[in-house]
Image (tube, rainbow, N blue to C red):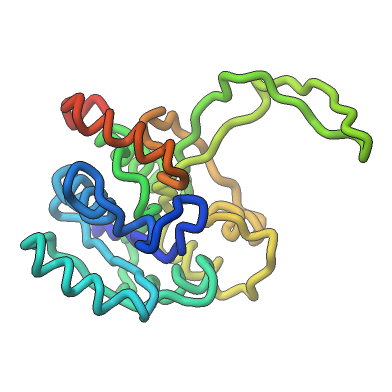
Length: 232
């Protein structure tokens, strides 16, 4: 069974601040995107990695690869105007293989665990589509009016979604032949628009998406703790 993983890294990082896009900001002395790719490669070196970057970031990426002696094997391709179109471009780099599985992962999630990655690929092989999710620990409320009124909702009915989201290749290709609509917030929502079901697996709480300066502080703490690969 051939496995692919599209790593999308096209965000501008406006909430992170600074001149450098968030995927290139340093995490313990190395760009975040490189930390992510090295982790993925360490988990499964047989998995084909496809990195999707905005065209205007390609030169920066090539320079960083030289500066940090980055050597993880991957296929590099240009991003699109939205995440949806970036995934389409990543899919274009994949050969048609009947029994292939393909995942999509955020380039600024450097702490996915080996177990979560393995679980997503296994369940996608069985069910066609699988995504990692974690429980909501805080209380959750629903805004019911313009005057600030809210009502509590049962948090056990909701989950926070992570990546990688993994699918049978033929299914994801078919899903991304649809026309883009704003309700496509992730790959699972694109697949569900076909009427297909997506199963959930337990994610790992450390698999945070680095979006704000606070997230970067948390990430540095995780890196400095040197938690074993199989545990985070």
